[in-house]
Image: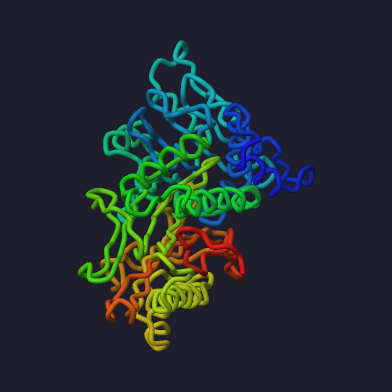
Length: 446
């Protein structure tokens, strides 16, 4: 059994209700797919009816074509379906409290056992005509589609498919509404089943991140930042975890000319030396759930057993900034309002804050409100105006700027990112957070 498998197995309450997902603890891809399908099925059964009734929607139609995927559709497919096939139309219809929400696919094939096939091309060769028949038979008053001006995750219906959908619906076309809150709600909400496995997925990501920030992966004076990036990529592949973004590694050191910021697109390659502050931005996922983390390490100089006090103080400042941000989480507050309140408190506490936090879940940069951007601490029109909801997961991504006396008063960027969960009343870290700089090489416990 792999380390990830053991972590997942230990995290589950086996045999107790919906969290009984023993299959998730195996490294075999077949059983992993079965476990992932359990998570998706629970979301379809529980979450879709809640969202449709909350927003007064009778029918939700999700349309995508192979290689022109709606981001929502991809998260509704079985694990063995890598994409839509030809044109795929998924339909949810609320038939009322007694009959519930039916779901079917206007497609040649059933979509696993999630969506029954509702189209026989031999009987009705025209897929759009068949969709029109099915919709008119149910006579919904409001038909939601995924079109959004604000977020790409809720904007999956292409122009051509929208045009053909309206033509197929005929007189019911005027009942179609752009309804991004359904798509956002589907993507942002974490179910109990999600949260039964998320801590173990997060622990596995943290352990891999921390292993890379040690003498196991770094030889000072030899290892470059690019070497460490590809070490992480190889480890992700070996452990059958998903890398949804290229890791980035950057360093800061005295007299370097200011803080270095990792850039995944045009990375700077440096050799990691004693006395460097090393920063890693690391993305991993498992069972369709993503993690997004940043941590810091100090490379000890000969004779040192601890990081300079100024670096330790900078790390503490970043932790205080985390505390301030999560203290302002409450249901109904907008991302912009939270940003303003957190910055006000951080500045009053003598910190120099840069806040750029975001939702996480089935996408690394997930659906929901954004709380600032690293290059822009002003309110964000659109994404920043969305309100925070209960049962959502977050990457608390930020940086505290702090002057380090041992580095000649140089201002150093202490960037951290850690994932947490907001249940509507309180915020908690999914698997703890970094509160001390990692030391390279690791030092024995006192």
